Length: 88
Image 1 (cartoon, rainbow, N blue to C red):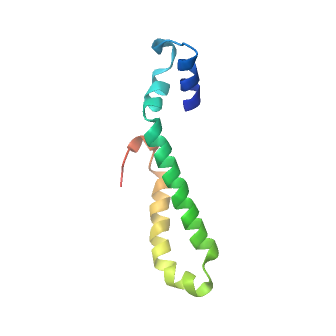
Image 2 (cartoon, rainbow, N blue to C red):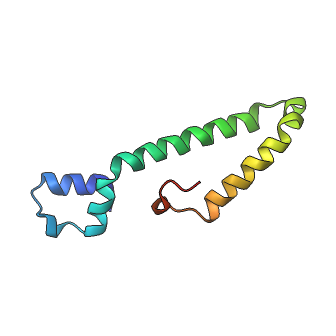
Image 3 (cartoon, rainbow, N blue to C red):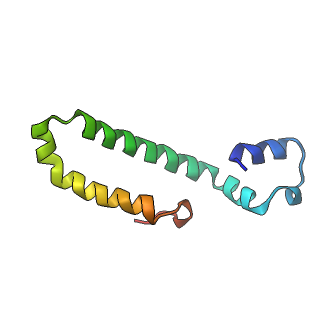
């Protein structure tokens, strides 16, 4: 169920007990989730731009920093969940 579905169910007059509790819990956090999604998108775009636009000399200079970023990104891809909150 998407966050929009909860909004439309509320607008359609569904009672609180007719909307799944899990969906309501996510809907309450919609602003934080949207902010996190936008932030992740910005980070991904910046990272990809750096990877794609760097010339060989720049890439060599950035190699160590990008390797550290890759480790952080790997953790995000394999371990972290949206429910982890503000894990660092």
